[in-house]
Image 1 (cartoon, rainbow, N blue to C red):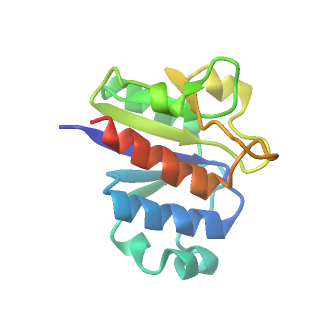
Image 2 (cartoon, rainbow, N blue to C red):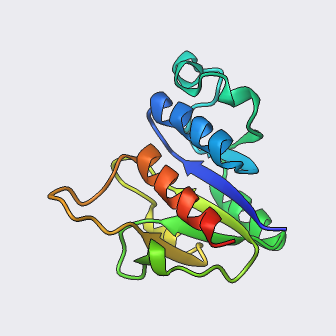
Length: 152
């Protein structure tokens, strides 16, 4: 059965994390991983933005994202990083190789660090048409998760 999980690594904004909970609830994401220093629902701004979705979405806080990625790969997940990178393919052109995907999101300013990009099976990006080269992480995650769910 197809499955999509989300790894939110070093997200600094509690409001973005709350938005991720809402997105995961809306799209039926099976689990939200909060890694590094990403705030969890004990932070009041996460709950304020999540509007209760933190109670309906399975989540777990993990400090070491590298161990998590390794564990997910051993469970048959294809780890896909959402990042502007020369190695990334357009999200619309991405075709999963596994029925289980884990989407890795990076920090709002720095993105996914290069050492973690190398641990991803593949990288995808959302092409931009405006002056800005990237979207808010929660917005980008919503677009990516929706597009990935359509691939199953």
